[in-house]
Length: 569
Image (cartoon, rainbow, N blue to C red):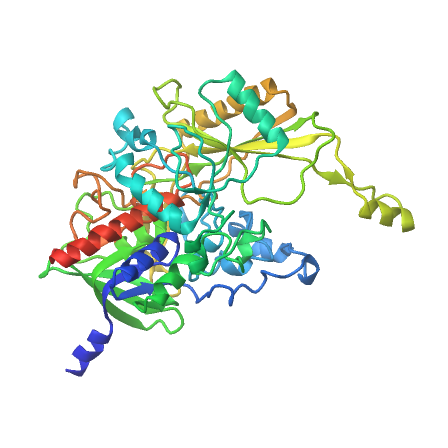
């Protein structure tokens, strides 16, 4: 009887694994609908504002002026490649030695293990997918078709945009649908020049201001969340004290907590999902305490696995039973396979000699953006799918540091404008999910908590190389025609992973023989388990994916709660 009572105390209506953008939204939606919800986070507790130790620090207050030491770089050859791994935000990022994995092929896995996950660190770019993106696999026959299309997710995009707060312009493009936007940020004069020239020279190419999850002009719903206007500090990776950008910590998790329906348990590493063969469904999760390694079980009617794409794959692969010897719900055999990412290898820099009487001042949290234009309406290149690109232009300053005394002081206090403007673009290419791009669990090697190490077997292919070549050719042409000079191109050859957009492995699809999840992000074989983070993605498109995760999550919770009320889950 005592054991039963103890189990009842660990029983909830829903369990959400992970507290990043998808997990935060799942928590908010369940709690808003009156469901007692347990949120499990493998990392430490981070509370909005209370646990942002560097957010208000000045540059001179950092021991190394914001830089990493040589020792830190040597000890972290993977994570030190990430733009956010600096002295002011390194406490929000996983160090290489703390959570090892096996690189069968080079893969730079960037992680944030704390309440809020990488929502404290993301680039906050939020472009919707279009119908072209959802129909890609069905059109070219590569990978499995999506079980949904744009009209299915359109209202849910609007739903999450309104709450999260997305700044953007109504551009009227079928390749990048408009949303429920706050006022847009402004392009610089040179970016506007590029925008005008591209429009003049190309009918199918557009330069816009990128949509971003920043409160350019807060609404009442944002004040209700305790958030304020984005101050364009460009210190977002430290955690924003104003809640100016969307994060789980500033938005969805506090909102869920206010309902009284959320229990948040940090330092809780999920070992596996528990499957009951007699009931034919999952009944809970096994959790390892991050400090004591004690195993505890929690129970619920519905389980949302939103632990970030690769960790979600690992949890499901480790959830073995007599019914599912190869991982939970893995009747199709595709679990852990068809992993994809974004191709960020190519970039371009240039100079512009005009607007000598103009300069940039201040900051903004976004840049220009060129939506995908390749293979949009028809297959026109020697590679599948396409790429989008960022675009930014500004004018820097320089000082004469060769002098001494008063002359040096005056030079440092009165920097001179550079002669020319700088400009640049970087590609965001869609990669094709392939069966050979996969993750597996090591049969013998374990981490400090007794969990099997993950093997990364993910790489570029010929399609990616062709896409890089085309980006360099097309953007060199565009910048040249628009009057830019000193154009320099680069293929970084960086390993997959540094884009931080891992997707797939638990993909959606209409056919249970070739996919894991149905159109509601619900497991074909285990109806009370849902996956709504990057692992669920059937293809990657070119757009930053987090907004789509949010919309899919809100949609899936709405469906799950309705099914719970019908007694189907």
